[in-house]
Image (cartoon, rainbow, N blue to C red; front, side, top):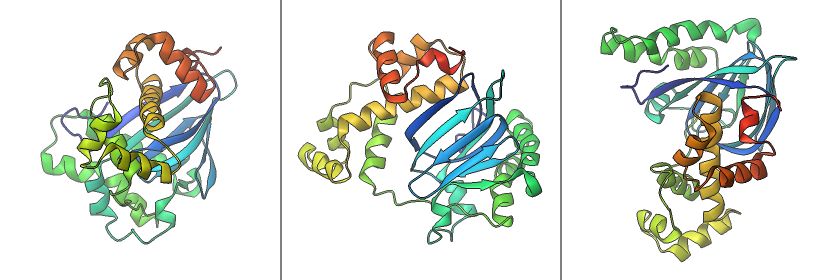
Length: 262
């Protein structure tokens, strides 16, 4: 739904047919989730929030969270997501770095602020090719400005985080047969130095590689109608069965059950 020529902001619809919990998901960009139907429970290291239809959840970038999407009875979970590039966030919230609340998930309740009134404007903006560039640029940041004026802030983390840097390299080509030494070369360090640094953070290269691929596949299952086999191939899995096994091991649910009730 978003403008294919505008990489700074992306709008995507999310639907899920059955309840599922997804642990330790990595939120790459600043993201706003407008819950339309069902509930969404999210948990970070410092906060746990439950959003219902009409509420808005705000995620700062490079955050690890666990999420549970729960459909209504005999219905689906539905939401609209909106993600922003760092430069737009920095322009709007340039002074929020020291605000600890701005570094974690936040919730904007339907009552009294009614955040869903922001959706029609941003949907219209991103669906139109006839808007003058200056007007388009101003309108796409209106949800961020609205949040700031309502007293909410979003902070950008340091780009020196080694886990973030490794993930960014893998994300450039999910189909690639990434090896630790190749990624380390991109970081201008030795493979042993990279492994030691990641171990100090309680993780390893293989775990980050698999998590990155699986989380991209989860996003595609939520937001596209692509066949599961094609999603597996695009995310770098050798076979659909290998993908299905890895997905179920990580998330406790089969890929196909994201879209269809088991």
